[in-house]
Image (cartoon, rainbow, N blue to C red):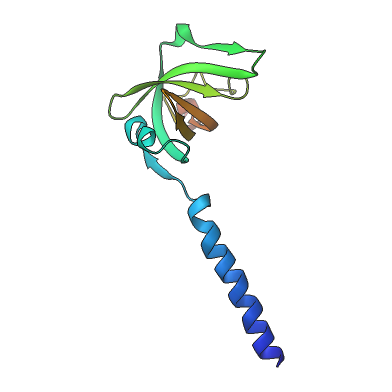
Length: 120
């Protein structure tokens, strides 16, 4: 009886994990493909462009900037925090977020700062 009850509990836990998996996994894509499914979370590899047009809006607690993905598409990006540390030094960033209208809403920004990996 205990073995059967244990198997049922494990089965329920596995089923819940499998049902949750599609919500937790996001895919790498570009801005155009992300725009085809607004609200779906994606990873977009991009470069920061038009640096002079970037600004932080304290009333919205948002950092606004322009980014260009690996296929050349340019989008305005909203990040709901101040500019991340080392953002200016990053050659490429990974924007984790979703498309909304003509914007990309970045919930997280991952950076690779090249100076960290250079030999001295």
